[in-house]
Length: 335
Image (cartoon, rainbow, N blue to C red; front, side):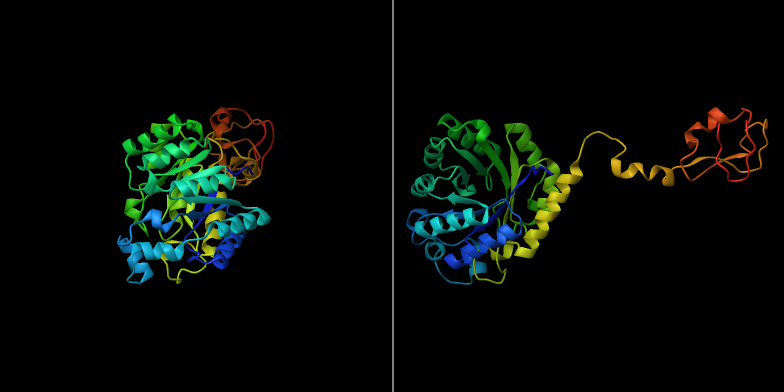
């Protein structure tokens, strides 16, 4: 079966700054049959000021009284480590992806030969960043958490006017709360994005379960991004809103089944059900003994299974006609 939906395992910072865990996440993503595994690249000094506070969810999940800068510093991977992760991805046969949070990181990823760039939601109004990325003329996945249609339109315009082909831009419906309340997912926005921008649309989901990606698969999306962790009990900002390897594998399997189930818009008798017609439908049968030249009436003709005789739909064509044969009770009528 051709896969229509690209499934990205968002490793993000769930490696807790350790290469060993990052490599394990790659393997877990591959075993779960994800199409890609995505990491994050940034320089903490460029990303956040020294005294910036952590988001409420990060403060809760890290359980540390530290600044956002210190947290991000602890979660950073070196460029050399990203190169090792990319090499490991190639070895296992899964696409390495990475979100860049600053221009320097964009340049590093370009040098690494990345052909598809992911714009994190927080950079959607970073026009300098978008202008620089647009000049790469690469495929771009634009996450739209915390934004409105006007901001999305502006971001797309900046990318496309600076060299990126508009058709190479995909949009992800996203809510930037970890975990996202189900009431804030707004799956129907997927249709709004498709209609407004005429581009491929997907979802970056941060709910605790995997019902949302499965439901989103019915909206004709092209991308699903979902966080993956080795263990939800690990200390870190995103572990609790991630899926463990078994859950992620179950999600992938479910999405692939939904892809198969979407099928065609045509209402037809399918190959699998044709054989059941004779068992489930009904035919015309004798409910009394009928002799040759007797007239067929509602008193001597009934409708019963199996369905391999004269179909029930033909009863009005038969009533009033003479029988050419003798029939016993429950015998299928024949012309």
